[in-house]
Length: 73
Image (cartoon, helix red, strand yellow):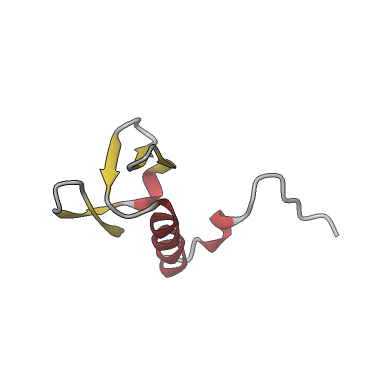
């Protein structure tokens, strides 16, 4: 879970496993896999950093691998 701040200044906790995409439109917009959107004060880089830290905490760092990477030697 990551803690973020909505545009009214209230903080909330979001389950980062459900994030589909993060955009700067110009407000940072987080779209979940169910298509629900959250608008937050944190910039895109901060949200990505917190998401990666959360993945590390729960042992899912392998989700950070880029698309197209292979296990070929």
